[in-house]
Image (tube, rainbow, N blue to C red; front, side, top):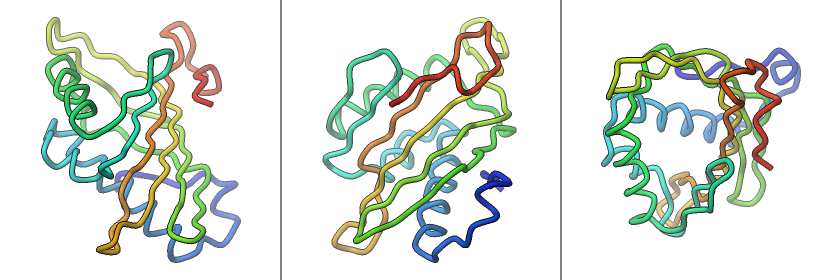
Length: 156
């Protein structure tokens, strides 16, 4: 499975719609791991915004595509990455999933260095006219390599 739920989150009932958006985030993670640009982009809404830590937001599919294309030339997410869901809620066709990626590794292609970052992530999803959940905002932060505490990554 591409995600796990935190123990605190497991104690609360999750609506079927919240389960759907968690599944969507898990499905997005699969092509991300394989560097499949086309299938990664299929998860984004036309007006999506990417909000990387300490960088300017990137708006629109073409701009986001360029970011992912450059990313896939630099790194590969290994298959051991697991999204640790800490919250998910849905209301009237919009929802969010908040997570920490608590384990996993990333390979730096240029030099073969293996990194073990901890991501703190927020996905905002909206249901399109066809009834599919699409990522409209994806924000993430990564703590410095000196820290292994996901709370050190500030996203919002």
